[in-house]
Image 1 (spheres, one colour):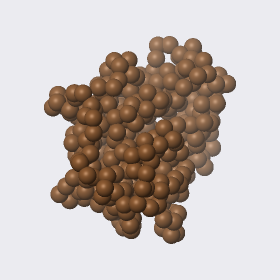
Image 2: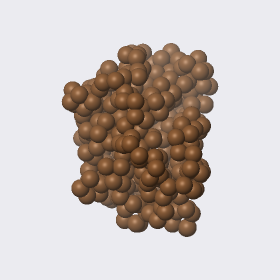
Image 3: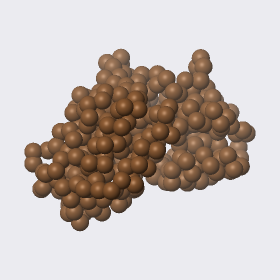
Length: 371
């Protein structure tokens, strides 16, 4: 399961900061328990609702919490995308903890939907790589954050290895006439415009002038005759690769792995030389929770190294807790890209541009243009 359809909020050097965390001594054998003695007694009894994507509210993720805190009646609510979740919360839906991505933090703070998280109540906080701890948009004051980052991922190029050789190394592969009729583009204004901006050589793909947006628009219109189709979900693009019709598209490390290993489709992922896009997500506490200690305990739970390992091995996500490295093989570390720090260091963390209304207008004009 990917989170590619989520608008996520600058360019940070992800791998560089992760590796700094390693050099700072974040490794070492996992602690038997990082929870302060007596902390479980402070966790309130009663219902606690976690509102999340379905892949991280399975028994694999939540059963250990239920066993550790039997007094908590942990309940699950699932959403498909964050726009949907925010609309329900504004309409009166109640939850205590939400899985949210960094680009949505400013909006949720503005809407007064979040409670600051006390990092002193997150025992795993000091194990989190500095890159994640220091992200500007999550800061909520001294010792407080709006969200505890848990995972991240790269969005680059997926391509058919039986059709494209050598591997593509640039976002310009999505505009290459050599692949006409076999190029797939994401039907999502932010990502489509951002990757086109990178293909044009613009260094900050989420901060574009009107002149740059016009150039992006022209390139996207010129691309239309080359396209096989647009896609809205990763399931759609995966099926195009299975059929053999798609040769190259925006895509993800996890989807390329599943297509290759589960379906036998010759698909690989590559981070373009201009830099991949990157999302960063985690867990926040919603305004009005009546069980703040239980909510903090659940947020901390998602940083447990054993759960972080699941995200690395099963989802190929980059994760926030440095202690997970003690549980992984060299091959598993390589699978999430830590063997290729240059690619991660060049990643552009996704944000919603300040002039996003203009971006949406540009995208509508692209869609309306004749091929």
